[in-house]
Amino acid sequence: MNGEKAFVIHELIKSILTLNRQYVYKKMGKIAVYPGQPVIIKTIAENEGISQKDLSDICYKRPATITTMIQKMENQGFIKRVQDEKDKRIIRLYMTEKGMQFHKACKNMSKDLIKRNFKGVTEEELDCVYNVLKKVKKNIEEEREEFKC
Image 1: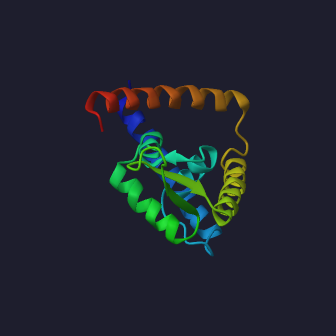
Image 2: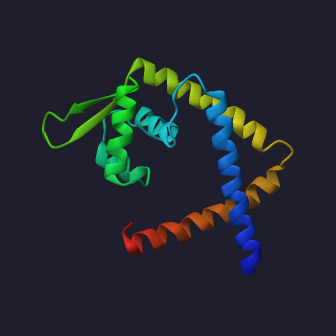
């Protein structure tokens, strides 16, 4: 493996994420969007009634981080927390109407971003990038399991 090339690719990925984040925050300027919120909203919308612990696991975030993010989103009116009826220790998360509108706006933004980001990229190039990134993710997940991050 060429370490220098891998480093350059790593830096490119970080730059792409930063540029995309800036684009999203500029476009969504009227709505106070905090880092990570769109992913959390998407996950809750697709898993209504998900527990905070399960959300933490799915999103690779620490429970304390999820709690802080959830509090912000609840204060914004995007989600509501409901205590589980069978196990009072469990907090379940549900979308509000405002949250669903935010989710829809995020989905539209995501479609625009994907279209913009991959303009001029062939299907074969996408397949190649997909396969490489899938391997990288697998490596990270294996390491994560080993150290229980």
